[in-house]
Image (tube, rainbow, N blue to C red; front, side, top):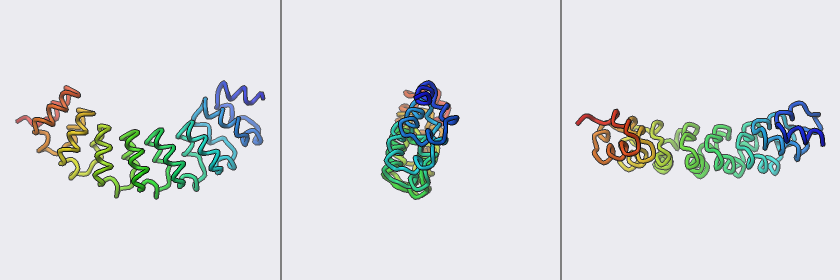
Amino acid sequence: EVVLAAVKQGGDFLQYADEKLKADEEIVLEAIKSSFRIFYAADEKLKGDKKFVLKAVKQSDIVLRDADEKLKADKEIVLTAVKQFGPALQYADEKLKGNKEIVLAAVKQDASALEHVDSKLKTDKDVILMAAKGGKLSVANDAMKKDKKIVLTAVKKSGKALQYADEKLKGNKEIVLEAVKQDGAALEHADDK
């Protein structure tokens, strides 16, 4: 009861709790509510309990970082985490970083998750288009940076994405106009023609 009251005020207090209390689901979930990074202090059994980790990851995607390795390879848990915070993909098992469904969910939530995607999917048009919808073009390969649809999608979200477009598209009036509408500073990256 005392520890529960303490972790309600600040989840970081979990690290000072007795080992038995670090295995108490109610206390650990309460701690995660107020300190999303505290899962590292939880009992190892909880870190390996799929049902518990699924509950915990719904409160904080960072739980995936400290979960048991086998759960980092669990599609349901990873998908739940990346739907909340795309970059949580970085904590997933390498195999799942190449799972298109998980990658699309991660990139849809936050285009910067593209940095953690398996290299094979970094050239997938669907994945790059999803990242472009988030304004992310910097990590696209050269072929994608030449794709008018992808570049146009990206600059509509972030005019600064123009700087990563292929040189020919930096002179495309439609693309430059959309980029400048979104961010006047994008003019700096337009072709002078």
